[in-house]
Picture 1 (tube, rainbow, N blue to C red):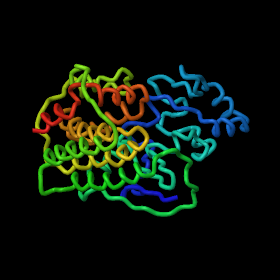
Picture 2: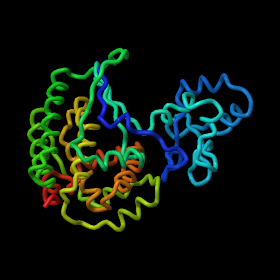
Picture 3: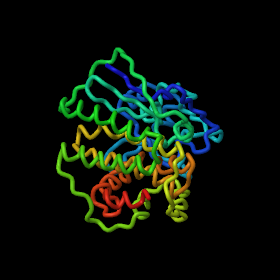
Picture 4: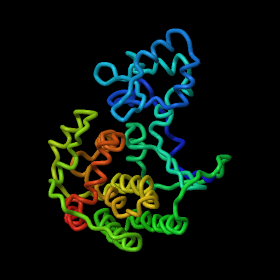
Length: 318
């Protein structure tokens, strides 16, 4: 299999107890089947402690019940993981081992990156000075079984290269680049599937009032939001590039490339309106990309909200 990652991917290192916003607080963690099988082989205090906090969510998934202040029950007073200490990091739940990494598999190619939901990862990506670039290497993993259409996949691979070239053209303003990107998205979408956006008159800032709240600080950000022009700061290019890398090719599954391009534009608007720093996009990512409920709602509004239509987004870029 070919593994493709951002050039900065290997620079990421978890800072554990020094993290300003622990990934072990605020959300539930699933206990995956492989981890549960291993826990069944344990004995003693750690086994009893694990058994005492296992529960089921409303979807029937096995989860760890959160402690006070939505802290993981294994997060100690030093913000370190007692499970990691007791049985090793390799035996913590899959979600914990992978965070903040994400994986997209496309048959013989796997793409991996790091998410803005981690403050350290957010700082790395926010502060890039050169255009986001990627490296590829062969590994021993077998190709993943899939039902994607090869012609559509390679069409999107080539299209994403052009999308990056549009974003990385520093001879023009960021706003103009995003306008060009939206126009390109409309053109691409016409080659894939009919796309009609709009229909729901929800207000723009209400899009970001997520029903499932993880960190109350996000609500404060939304309440204090101010509309202003998009700056030509490099971090805006970086934010848009993140969304194009993470989501663009997933259009091979739903034939909706325009919504993925909208996400790149809206990502820039989030930082423009809510705070021009890595902490702001970190909070948004943690609230939205790591809540299935919030993310499903957001994806729906990408197509259905009048304020997120192509024409309305264009108005916000100047």
